[in-house]
Image 1 (tube, rainbow, N blue to C red):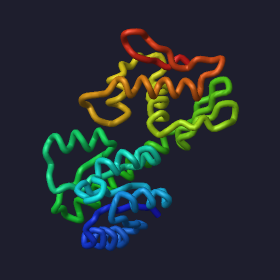
Image 2: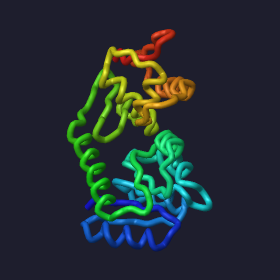
Image 3: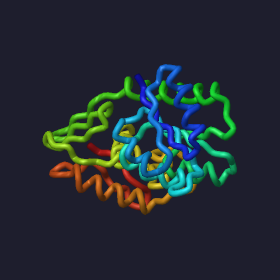
Image 4: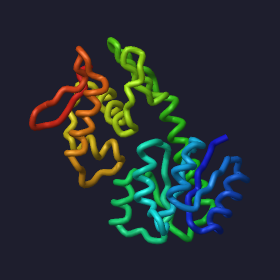
Length: 221
């Protein structure tokens, strides 16, 4: 049974979504604010429906915090749909938007589409082994000499991108856009810092990520 976390400060919306999704066979948890949303991550949801306009901590901030712990699809609920709102949401780590008022049929269709995509990703995953480095793509885990390297979600996504395109050089901006899932203005400094941390965690005698000066990075295994 797939698990959904619904985060909205309006009780009626939480109730409607919970009742409807449970009738469709989902296990639904609810939260009325950002703090409860973070607590709800203990249920390991397969998908999160997240309201943007909440009083204590808006959805963008909550999304950014959630992305440090989970990589499941996040669907924003919003009463507006301006371009700058979409940009801000995608940069925060969101995957899709549902505009209020919404139809339950549309909501269900979007939820099912994102869950199907996640299942396809998991089925196509495999394991990479090179020396003492083991990467389990389906389990989202990196081991060095049998020990968990402790990569964050973003760090793992960068490794996954580079290793699945081994030898191909990616500019910092490209990595940012591919990992965050949004084709827009990127922050190269953030990627440089992530690369530094990844190297510290997985590099020993073997160097896995090569810097192509003035261009970007590539996986050399």
